[in-house]
Amino acid sequence: MTVEQPSALTRDEALKIVDELVKSPNIKKHLLAVEAFMRRLARHFGEDEEEWGLTGLLHDADVAAELARRFLLEEASALAPEERDAIGRYLVSRQGEVARLRRTAGRPWRRVAGIGFRLALARELARL
Image (cartoon, rainbow, N blue to C red; front, side, top):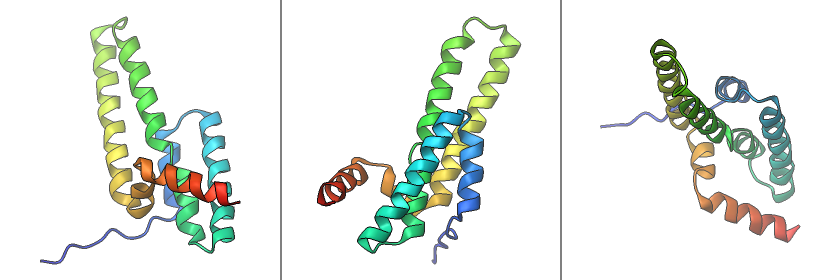
């Protein structure tokens, strides 16, 4: 049985994911700045600039979604039942977006999902 790998994620697709998951303009600016920084590092170290850039662009997308989820859960207790239901539906859709991001992004997502990425980045930065 052959398992089909998802097609490579494009920058436009990654930007759509960021727009769907990240609502804070400041976090979006941060993600774009990290993307640019990672592209420069890739050039410096002779690595895949597109992959490193996407890694930087997506590195906090799930964190933003989780922060939004926590905020909404904390505020839900003060809301009417129909408002809580609407928030519940929203949270389920956001969780679906994070799951889709993980499936779609493939290798760039796996690179930032654990401590290994942060340790490797720290080692490379120390070499500069």
